[in-house]
Image (tube, rainbow, N blue to C red; front, side, top):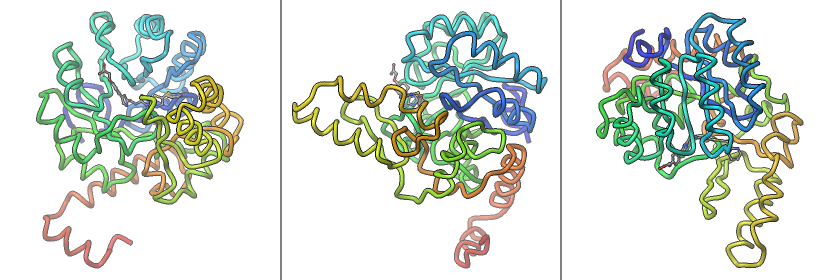
Length: 326
Ligand code: TUI
């Protein structure tokens, strides 16, 4: 299938693997790219040498395009931005800020730039700054999020910019893709669905928590402090919420919360501490029921999306009435 996004990024299927700090390494990214999507290595807060090593490892496993993501709140972002030029990754995505200061450098290096945004205001600024496409990420997503839902954000961003829009947040199966395309998207980005890919190196206990998650099992911490993060409910998330309430009441300062947050994602991803770590995940964790190879995730996803999109509204309604997909 061809969309402006597949053409732009040189991929076969309009599926991008979301960058997940501590999780999205060469193993996952290479598997997704090899299966026809775009694999992305998340630089997170890793040392530059780790990023260089992962890009080289991914290259050893696939000759298809590979992307990398910079989290712009990271103080090392300027150095990472330069490193990604030197490594000649095909695509850079960014999160948690504006990548405007690096845009010229990346474009000069021939890198496709795809900022993740949570508002039409930033989408417009990014288009003016030369972004090649935009990821519109709804608050259903896992990790650091904005305030708008995918259902409102995707069409609003599509109306605001002319460059292609990729929907993220709330998509984990073919139905979600058809919905995203109906809202104006030309590709989707998924993180949580790929957390349980066989090639995903996240701790097995974290994967199991995703597979077991119910619809009401995610919670957003940090809304008041300006760093909203969606994750699975556990002891860590409850502690963070309690500390936030104490902070709002002026009972404690920010240090206690900072101590709790430090290393919380690593504890979950690397150590498998499913109680005391931050199990970042999107609302669609409740739709992810199995572990399978990235290629099978992508193939099943595309098959399902094709089935859902090849009928009229009337046929959809008739099928929905009998839950005939079950
Ligand atoms: O970046 C993400 N999601 C993330 S980053 C991350 S790493 C982390 N590790 C530990 C604790 C906290 C975070 C985990 N998840 N998604 C992309 C995204 N960007 N979502 C929302 C935004 C965003 C929000 C505001 C982008 C720009 C923005 O405003 C910038 C501006 O200048 O207007």
